[in-house]
Image (cartoon, rainbow, N blue to C red; front, side, top):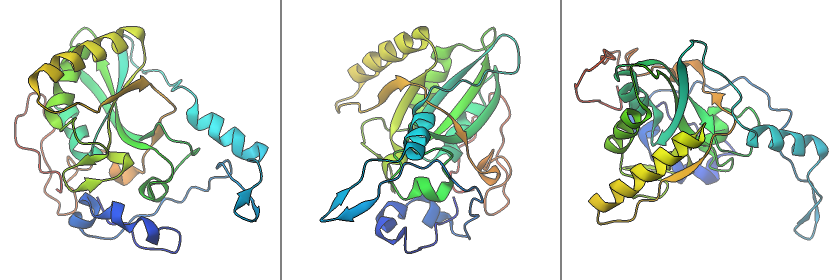
Length: 243
């Protein structure tokens, strides 16, 4: 992903950006949204703060609310996963037969309508996630779980390779009790195969904020260098995360 340029508000978080953003090179495409419902505190001296304003509380409530979107196509369901940099994770799910749509975005955080810059500060607690829409007659949730486990290392807290930060944590976010049950059973099976503790969080979905358009299907569209990678169903070509 393009690097986040340093600014007075983000310089202290530069360690988090020693990641795929920096290694990808190129300039950042900054979000243009203005967040009027961000949780806020007012410093009143002596290191203490006033209580969060009612507007900030509303923003927090919105961010922490459930994902109430519904798949457009009948017979389809949503699933949501965090497994590191969402570029490569999305492409892996695009290739799954029965997956009808994928979107990358931000979820599980405490800020309403975050931008990419907001998430990269590490202060919002959002995760980079892929929301997968799949046809239940052609794809099972267990199929998606198999791709999820194969795509990343679920034993590294807040990290995938050189990508470090809370937005790279491992997570399965469920929409239904059936998905939760399948996710927990799948985790138990995976744990028996590994000699390190799995740190994947399994939580109810929260509001999904679609990422900026340049992030969507990034690797299929060519990435930074214009070398598009196949999203064809069943494709097994290695995924080059940095395009």
